[in-house]
Length: 553
Image (cartoon, rainbow, N blue to C red; front, side):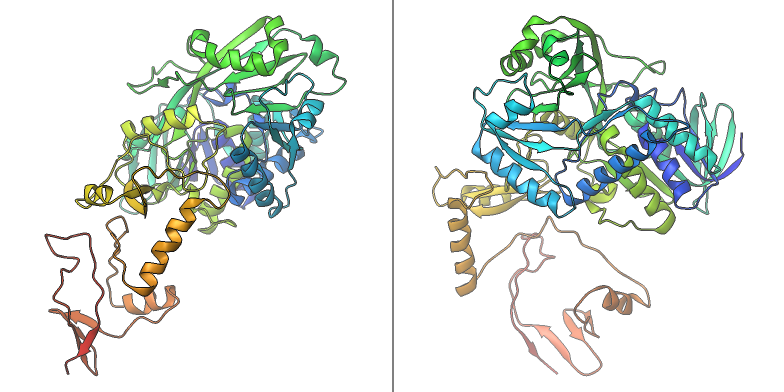
């Protein structure tokens, strides 16, 4: 085993293997992956392994498109082909107009990234998926690239290509501790020796916080038990004449795809269960949780109502294993907060579908310092200290229960709220404030005209736009007061601070400093005329008043 490497990636699932491979693609060959067991022995091995192009933002669509293109390339490799059922197509169902409007929105979003979706009516959904009923169905979204891949073959193929480019993979090697040195390099202690590394990557799936603890950090990642089963052979599948498209159903909280001559059917039940909150057995590897189909019976009834053929077939295998969620549902890919030369690629609840793209994005950040996309939506530093394990688990439960229900405009769900408030929060609430959430802070979004006012969340103009328009008009003609406690304050010091800040922002930074309540420059002094409370006031620490200043010298 090497005693020194430029990068050590910890974890041999899709996240780690993708990162290792893409580091070599960016030109770094002195890289190592360390895995405590066999590759794909964590969450990856029992994944349903669906690969879709559907994403909630253009960045996510771009990452999934990269994954799809990479997986197609791997599947076509003559020397080591990967089993990839590409282009089966997939339908996301809907029974409300708001959900159909959302599909129209996401179709437009995807088109900007060169991806073509199609909005279908109920009859066309049934024509393309012969096993579904159209009862209580309005339509769906068609993704022609939808498919699924073999998880183990995928990871082995990525590792194989990384090795060919100079990387090394150490299986059955446990990381026992991490030590950071004064020059920000690391020593990765393992049960087979130490490796000195410039950079460390945490790609440890559901064991993310075990390695995080070795760095002195806690990541807002929690695990949920997730069940699916595989049916016996189904006549409807064998007689279809084509592969059955994938199905995702927000109406009944399940998904399905073809598995040989039957179906794989997975559930996102309301009576869901967290996993590993009190620690994880060190021996848990390539393992599953006990079957618990009673917990998904209500969801199964909905699945049978949508696909009646399920009532006539037996169950061949049940899989119940942990999957990871972050506090906002999006992965954590990038620099670890508070640490230098430390990165993570964690919280990939749809790891197989997105992992190719996330490893590509992270490798660019490590090698070049930035990536080809705006990475803030995935940046681990987007959270502050409120992202505790308890709060993360509450959000994980909520996201699990709403897996196929995307957030509508202005919609902020209730789990874990309020996490952060100010002394003004109850006063604003009494005044009729409707609150949004920004980094855990409760922030007034608008003020309800009546106590009975309820906003309709949708992708159309609603009565709330009239409320906001009236508020804008008042601010335009009179005055507005805003609570700013939720905003970050950044102090920039040093002899070159002004010039650096002047370079970073669009406007010019004044060449003056403030001393004892006065603005001082080489030509004049400006002093604030207002005697109102300022942002340092003990009584009103969250308000800033803007008043005209006067020249005093």
